[in-house]
Length: 75
Image 1 (cartoon, rainbow, N blue to C red):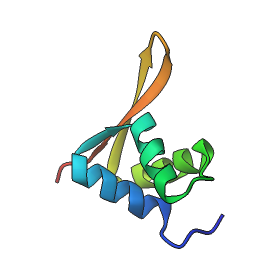
Image 2 (cartoon, rainbow, N blue to C red):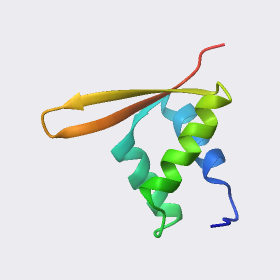
Image 3 (spheres, rainbow, N blue to C red):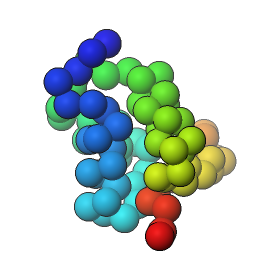
Image 4 (cartoon, rainbow, N blue to C red):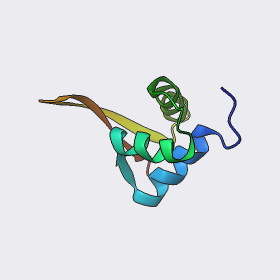
């Protein structure tokens, strides 16, 4: 879906503001902008940012399931 502000730009703003963010917190923040956003859209945006070498996404396995920790690549 086409959005007025690209999801990638919102993600970068959120991550730069906090230096790192958990996936659940990221989804919650993005839903404040776009209530209909899906996890698939967010994961695709994260993949684009990671392939552009702007962020690092780490998969973390916990007792309650799998989550992701996202942080900005340091220059």
